[in-house]
Image (cartoon, rainbow, N blue to C red):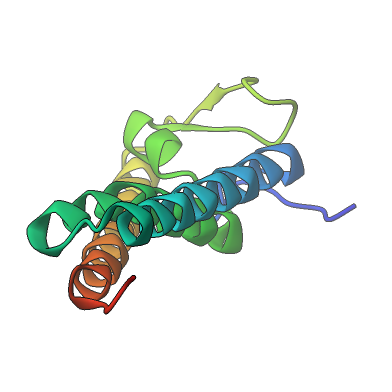
Length: 128
């Protein structure tokens, strides 16, 4: 198993939590695919297709968190976890907390941008 430890702004989750983020990414991607399939079947066009931004952003955020070994929610909350799911420990150092919040904000922004960019492409795609 990989040996991970808390590193401010760069690592705040261990193997169990990383696996959980990967599952979130897969579920988000499947949901996005289901939306696209439904758009094609039911002839949904234009701006209505932008709802796919939500599952795409969710997938992107899950994937980024797994890759970076960093949970954005824990980063904002000032917590970390390298044990079983839900075994949270608190970040006490203010400088570490600032670094974690910066990383969390970056991941949130990246995921949102991926979701919006993907939704824009889906909105103009010739489906069905």
